[in-house]
Length: 279
Image (tube, rainbow, N blue to C red; front, side, top):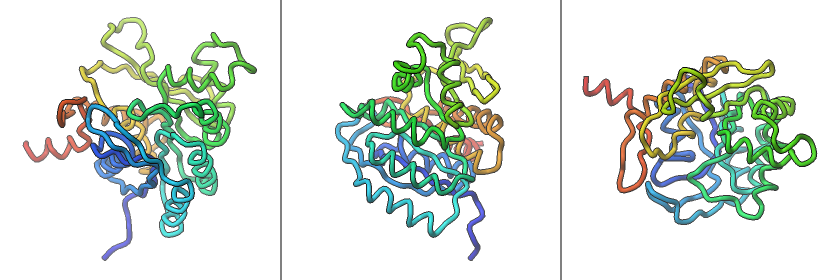
């Protein structure tokens, strides 16, 4: 019998029966990258590899209690927060992680896998911006998602046609350490089949990584990347290095993706082990 030695990561998110998104996917990534995952369930999903048919949210008190009991027992090296559907969940999670400011926090608040939050969507995003973004080590979102989040402040503070960099700077000024924007233009010299992920810090662009577009469609690609970033941060990597390694890992998971049924391709998060077994 020995004490826990691999880094512990606490993730908040939904339980996806397919394992393509949410905490089930995160746990697979953490394990593949040498970490141990702990999970707080925010919702139960009914769905397959093509669509989500229904969603049952967890009571906000249960979200808090799940996390508090775990954190009283174990010391975590990082947090990951996935897509949020409920304002009370967002507030509760923000209060919990505020007690652990030394643990890196990766926030990936959007997911195409889950339905829209409905009429409370704007208020939910405002809570995310006000309570979670200032505590975040790495905020990950696409250009479209960044624009959606920016709608919660643009009307009063900056113009609606502000460039991406201005939106990013606003978030960093709130206290977010780094913002990773996915799907940005790769730049001159690259074809349409190449896209990029751009990491921003307080001094501007930290890294800009171009990637060959892989044919999909994929289910859970973004969640794989954010979970991998959390894993590498938990293992002690600095943020630029964690982002680089996580992108390499995600590209491999997508290249080895599997189709479970008639729906989208699911990233193969254990592809390294499968390669070793067949070599």
